Image 1 (cartoon, rainbow, N blue to C red):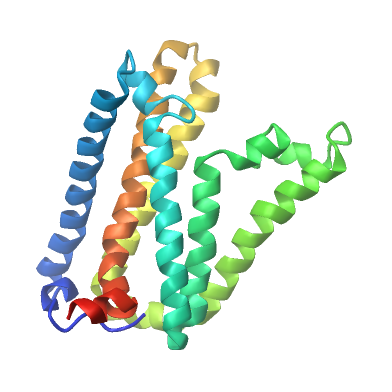
Image 2 (image 1 turned 135 degrees about the horizontal axis):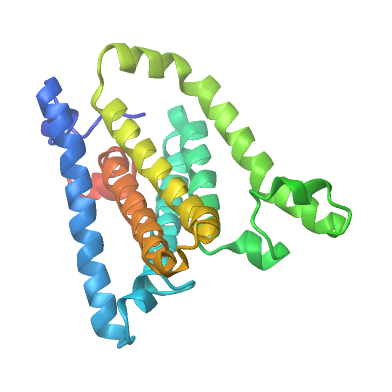
Length: 239
């Protein structure tokens, strides 16, 4: 990715301690922002309970989370169009942000009525062929293709950054941990709690998942922000 803005050297994390501090600072800022916006959503919508704000489908937190990914998509697209040297990386992130936003809005469920992780449905003749192809061609194949392209584009730099303990390696690792946390919580409340007879806890875990996904989106934006500042046109106009 492009160099950090010269007026923001602290973002580079000169020491290992500074790098760890940068990762946790981004996470704390994301948590604080999400908590503040959730409180504002509760106050402004007058919804009866916190579950309606955080855990409900198409609720305020889910809509804000999707909005974060769509804003990031626009910024990544603009960065890709204005920064030819790393255009493929930026456009790959553009597509990923779009897919994350659509996933947050459950667009795949709207289109087919079932989640794309129900693999048995792909070869089940009881489901229309068009629906099965839509999930595979619209979600799974694009994510795999983007991941493969990005991997071949950045694998050398990734290895070098890992060996040099570059600050964004820690940020990427922490973001991956957040993503894994959200996936695990999703599976727990969707599959394992009913099996264990703990349906009463589902609302709590649904809220935890939605809030975790919101934090993940804001955290991703906070990590990418200095790179956008180095690339997007508005940074030059502000300097």
